[in-house]
Length: 202
Image 1 (cartoon, rainbow, N blue to C red):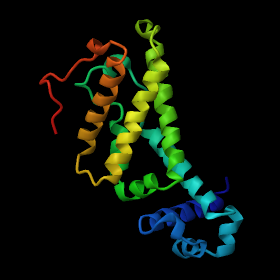
Image 2: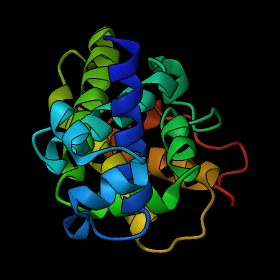
Image 3: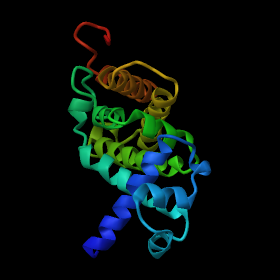
């Protein structure tokens, strides 16, 4: 992509995201976006047909950033609740700009990122459990979906409920809830290594 085109799109994306921090997406007009980006309205239409198209570009960029901080799971570490939870990087990423992600999470377009992150979590868990012969007889698709649902549900709750829990704590609790629920329902709860002190502390 031509650097000028890339720079213009980046400026428009940053302008839209800064406005979303201040008002609902539905209330934002294209003229307001171009004013914030310090560019002409005609320039906007050279790159995007609608503000929704611009938002989808923003969400795709955010998804790429999230994927940049996530790492593949190792089963023996995931089952050990004394280890850093695999969802910690996700919560830490969102914590850096909670107001923006709170507004995106409650908007209809935010469902796109939620769904893509869900698909990533499901795929990672399918691969992780699928590599172990011990879980070959289990409904790992159902388990993976439960884990993803727990993570996405707690992310949205944490962002929108005004929770003061730290990213470190909410990720530990989310991971413990997800894994104990998934393993308990298939009778493999003993595979989980519980915290050494027996509790998940703040």
